[in-house]
Image (cartoon, rainbow, N blue to C red):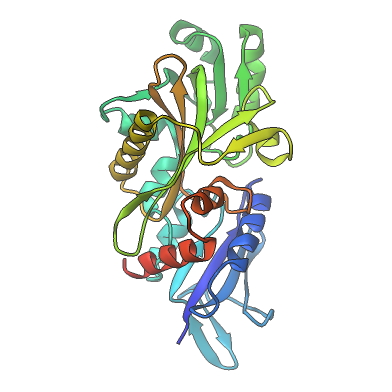
Length: 334
């Protein structure tokens, strides 16, 4: 009998559009000989479930089930492909824990923690040889005196970004103090980002993104890194999703020592944050020093054909179908 998979997509933020593209790609690459796929679309207006026959059914949220021809269908495992809230901030994971449905991502605590960039950096500070850019974390009631506080602690240029956002929404690079106020307003006012802002010093270096996951045998697997080169001033929303603005090199051109260091750092980050399933870590190798500077972690990384994880899966000699099968089987063993 095939395993009943519920592919969960949609979301409450501007990242929902990316979630739908990711989910469509994943669905097209799931092994249908092993899995029967139902799709749940979560929107601010409600939750909808589409069965494999294309018919929509009402979800019973008391136990996360549907009724098909007077038969209750309950799902064996959830494949979460929902970027932003509620799929990446722990809310959905907490609900699935309560209805006893295993899932493919980090648990509720790790998801909530890693959605908060400032708190994540605080947890990672004790990792040897891991470097973190100097930063200031601001809360909503600190907007008034923010500029003076930043000027006292940080040096230009700066990155200003929502502390709980994704896809670089609301993010700005600030090269002059006269631009800081507008950047703070943009970040504070970004939708559904927790009304917190992280301001970090700019690190000059090469930018990379690298996936890591735990397979069905419980082994941690690090995927080949991707290097990001963009014609934009930084890797913002437009650079991420507009064709032609960014060159992504997978596998990245790294020396053996650079690769070993990156793989080791990413594994330590994964273990320190108690991650599960697949995650993606973004980092800089600082110019001249090759110091590893952590940028952020993404616990529901993009899954379009052009996204980093599928690129890296192919570079590792796997198919996406094999990769998603491994993730699902690992989740079923939780």
